[in-house]
Each structure stands twice: as C-alpha cells, then as structure tokens.
Amino acid sequence: MMKPVHVLAFDADDTLWHSEDHFHATELAYYELLAPHVAPDFDIKGTLTNTQRINLPTYGYGVKAFSLSMIEAAISMTDGNVPSEILTRLIDMGRELLLAPVRLLNHVPETLSVVAEQYRLVLITKGDLMHQSRKIELSGLKHFFEHVEVVQEKDIATYGRIFNDLDIDPREVCMIGNSVKSDIVPILELGGHAVHIPYPVLWELEKTEHPMPSKRFGELLTIADLPAWLHDL
Image 1 (cartoon, rainbow, N blue to C red):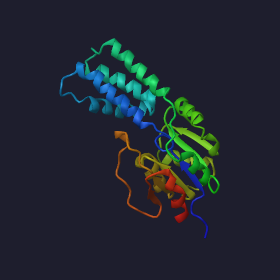
Image 2: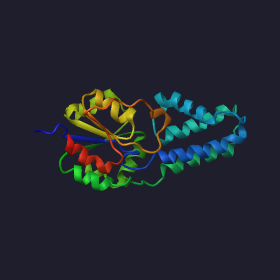
Image 3: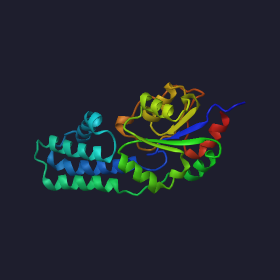
C-alpha cells in the first residue's frame, strides 16, 4: 500500500524550539511595569492583547511587532504619561527577546533525523524574516529541510502558494505544529494531514476550536511520537 503522506511540513516556534514562554515572561514583566501607572482595576493584559489584534494587519507577527504594540499600549493606557524610562525598558525587553538563545525542544533533532529518511521535509514559519532566519541558523536544524519559508500569515492561500511553488500536492502533506489555528486547520481544509503537538503556553490570538477527530488529524504529546503516528497511517 502506498503511503498517503510524502512531505512533512514543520512549524518552528514552539514546535521545534521554545518561543512563547519568552513572550509570556516579558508580558508578566510588562504588567508589573505598567501597574503603578494605571488604575488598580485597569485591564493591562486585555489592552495589550487588543492592541496586538488591531496591529496584526500592519505589523504582522514577531518580536518587533510585539514591541511596538507594547509601547503603543503603554502610551494609550497612561494617556501619554508613561515615563520615558519605562519606554526605554520596553525597547530593551524587545531587544532581549530578539537576542534570546534558541532552546530546542526535547527529541527534535533525533526525530527529524528519523523522518528525514522517508519523507521530504520543509519548514514553514511566520514572523519577522530577520529574526526567524537567525533562529533557524542558530538551531542547527536547517540542513534537515529542503525548503524553508518565512511567511507573514499561515492561511489556506499561503500554504497553497507554497505547495504550488514546490510542485507538491497538498493532499500528500502532513503539517506538524503547535497552533491549531495556524498549523492544523488550513492544511486539513486543503485536504492534507496535520499533527497537533501542544505547547504549554499558547498566545491568546492563536486560540481556536479544535477540529473533529479524523484519520487525517492527530494529536501527540511530544514530537518523539511522530514516527509511530506516521507509520500507523
């Protein structure tokens, strides 16, 4: 019997290496910085999230977009009275995120090595091109992938373009990622397979309902379980 999947497409952040925990720690520090400058019951988190949501079409994803939204929200929620030293600290926090080391998730290199023996591997990640490219290089994983794509959005149109450019039938693709919204749903709608591997922290704007169970959709606890899941297909 011919195998239904010939290409494995991997997400990067929070699938191959840690990422969202860095953002989460920065957000907690942000709340502490702004709390003394707003009313006790002010919704700092909600204001920051809403600012990010509004800015997505303009700024896109990534640390630079996050940093600009932090600064904008700080100015807005303090009516322009945020101290300059806090703005300076926010800029430093963004720089620290950009320079954070790449920490691979457990079992990633050995799993990629195993599946690369039977499948074509591509990497599809969204965010800032310069930052994502830097992380890919530092990860030591680039050699596993025949193609790397950094995109502004992960949706049906974007995936369709990528697979068309690579002369890949989407029905022969399995996408592996931590975000149901970005990594799973678009691929399933294109007729492909998808594997969801949750990360402990998920950005508020990536949350969505999970698809119904099917033969084309799997959920795993760790990437180490991927070879066995593919074998069972």
